[in-house]
Length: 68
Image 1 (cartoon, rainbow, N blue to C red):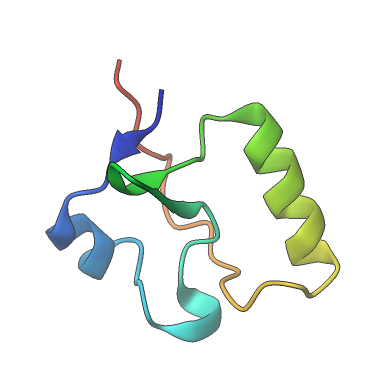
Image 2 (cartoon, helix red, strand yellow):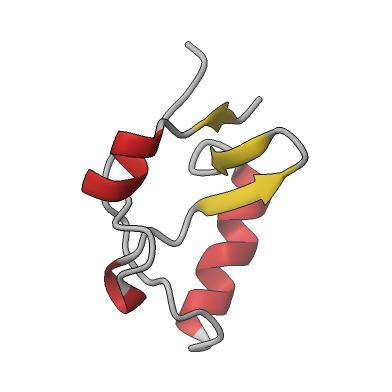
């Protein structure tokens, strides 16, 4: 299960809104802005799109957030 990213973490670590520096694993759903780094299927899709230059966000800024 993905964890909602605290606003301060979004700014300081994820660098949301900073172009290529922005973490590539930020996703959003009806529950808020979340970290997908521990979701293997999403990570595979995101990494493939980054490699194909299909994402502006290219960062891998931390170990990721998890519920555990």
